[in-house]
Length: 415
Ligand SMILES: *Cc1c(COP(=O)(O)O)cnc(C)c1O
Image (cartoon, rainbow, N blue to C red; front, side, top):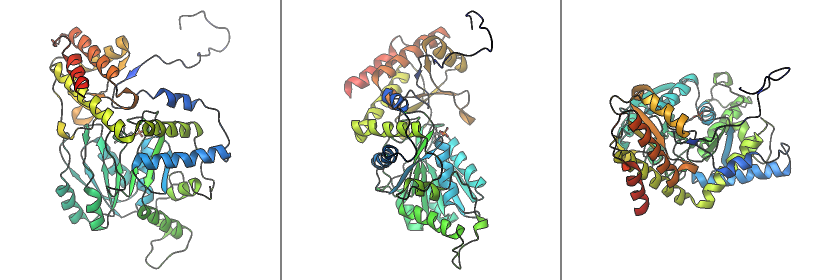
């Protein structure tokens, strides 16, 4: 910008992002080895190396999800691509879908199910709370849905909805159970098989420590049966009770039946698998499993506890039912008289640290601070708290000197 003017067309230089510590609710700083994986050379779509890497990625994600599901693949696109693929593939127009909404992403599930022409029923709790399983059961009994769509961790409120009893409940009523685990997978316990999930989707840019752009998905045999019956109907092999093919929302890109055929042994051409994103997704799972699934959850638990103690040590209040908070994000009340957006801007401009703003009823009320993936570490937690202290003081907020860093360091010392 300030250099000598160039002759001819004005070309920007090569991309050269500033160093940032991404401590918001996602995206977060990627593991260095994930970035290195993304710069690996490309191979052809059916190169034996490519198909072998796809198969390895499936095996890795079965372990990440806690499943033996054959149908464990990636959907190319951000987390929302996984959500949309799951819903449009499992729901037929007119099907009843129940969405317990406890934050913004529940509203998204309801919106996508509405676009898929489902009959959508929602139940709600105030932001900052989760549902007791009895409330979900009561609604299932009343609505009798085909599909229950439930977010696990909603970053908009930081809450982690317990799922462990929901699968058994769905099985009792013959309901398919889908969860969006984008924000929580990797940093909080998730057990696809033990908890009775029929479908679950995620993204890389939260606790998995990669860039957005790939959506891991797993589908139970029961969910795959639903897809296959659709494919049968669409191929014109109708059974007497089956609806017409014209009754379906017919996405091509998000047709999970076709996506499974592409990943499966027949490797039927569908899209061109996004090679660099496959490398990234594979590396995200590999670093997680190399450290150990339980060890990574524990690292997130400690980092989250340290950040929580730290913001409290600065005299700040925390939003929501903290006992049900995800490990990896905390919502911090903006003190009265403090300009929340100016604090965020100063954190970024002067210290290179990004923390999050918030949406809907929490807009202007809380900052969201994440401790996820590569940044669920003591240095990132302490650096962020030190920076927040400095900036808060600059904006006239009297905070105990060292109160945040000391409280967080104490958590690490005790862990
Ligand atoms: C962050 C988040 C997403 C993000 O979706 P993208 O399409 O990757 O932007 C989806 N669901 C939940 C619950 C999230 O927290």
